[in-house]
Picture (tube, rainbow, N blue to C red):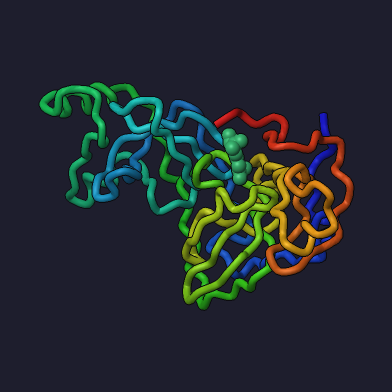
Length: 265
Ligand code: MLY
């Protein structure tokens, strides 16, 4: 197995600093994840956010749940923190006078929804209310600075949390850039997004932190000193602003490969 990614070393190598904890809408001490696979709960439908649906816990990863909406297919799983405001105990919707809705893409005839709902809840193991944690307050104001490091969800592969760098800051938004991935996965999000975490989050929660990608973006200055810039695909050690010296790759093949242990998507 290749050498493990280590934030302390990486921050030194990239001469960068970690974004401070108070910048994030995350608890200083990550919430404990008491959920078990198979438990049911209510969740906002990510594809139709006005609907509250029944979801089943399909997997557990750190402080997150892998969720699947009952009556939906297995191609639209989503991940939520145990302190997300998108999830709540079964019964909450009704208590508030709302109605549980079929998920977008409900696989059966719409008329069969009431019976489907009864059946799916009958004998179900409902996640206890105590497992749901209060969402942390919004940080105000946006205190991220360009170049700060963080851990961020890859929105194209949301089960992955990766080392990232703040590439830009505008008002309440930040531009999240993924180290070593040449911009392909970068995105803008609000500074209070639940998809970004302080350095060390994964090691505290037990979620898996991906290593940075292998791809260095070729800047004009570095291209000059490379005889064959197109073949240079070392691991990125650069923050967007400055060119830090690039150490030799650590036991991983250079090239457009995926980091090991990662499923192809
Ligand atoms: N199958 C994809 C996975 C890329 C993941 C990138 N993240 C970690 C920023 C690929 O190899 O393109």
